[in-house]
Amino acid sequence: MKLQYALGIAVLTAILLPVFHYSTYAQMAVDTTVTILTGSQTAGCEAEDKCWDPSTLTVPEGTAVTWKNEDGAGHTVTGATDPKDASTWGSIIIGGNKFDTAPSPFLIAPGANWSFTFTEEGEFPYVCQVHPWMVAKVIVMEKMETIGGGDGKEFSPPMEAVTEDGDIKVRVSWSPVTIEQGIPIDFKIETLDPQTSEPTSSKLYDSMLFDPDGKHVDASHRSLQSKDIQTYTFENTGTFTLRLENVNNTGQAVEFLVTVVPEFPIGIAAALMAMMFAGAIFATRKYRPLMGRY
Image (cartoon, rainbow, N blue to C red):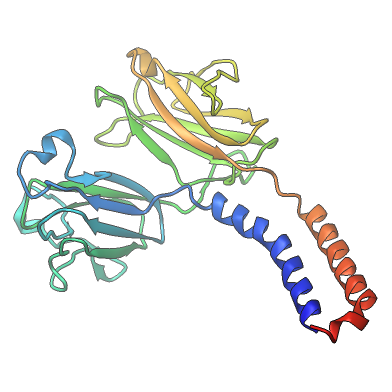
């Protein structure tokens, strides 16, 4: 019987390993960790945006965000409606829970982590009570966005980037949520004011797509709307770059990295599984006289 069990395990492993790999690969798009950077305890880190990494994190509703302290000093993560006003520290309540490390553990010790789950939409600024120059925020979006027109399309949690001059924020999400090879993907692109997240008055950009080798693989698209849909079909897998140039005629550009996974043919997988199990049964029957030797 040992041979039969071994064959069964081998078949299951061969079938399920690609599925597990595919599922994990497709779900790795959103990083939910904020690193408290080395040197954050010293005033001046905020001038170079080197206190928190990232200092602005965008996540879908229901996400647990983890803060990891890589600095040599302890820090707090304290929600505040106005981080510059100490009287508002600890004032943010989300889902009945205070967005604050205080009173316990209060300080996130060097090398330690602390997590908080965001169950409501909105923008949630926070500060370190011990080092008040350390200010950052978490933006919580709907888990899935639905665009109009009655088509019921569901879009991914958005990615955001700000132009180098800091004047324009660009937000990108896509549908279907998993970007698969050979499937048309709709990218929703918005140009926003970085302070208010409201649509900008100028609504222009040139969007271009580059493959993992840096080759331009699609014609440029010019937008005339603040909320615009661009559609791309990826013929290959890997990490592609969506580049938006001359945003709002400023000469500024932003880039987004998107990962394309191979299309997983469930029907073929099911047929393959049946064939492999049939082969395993045939093998165990054919070699049944030999099993007693193992």
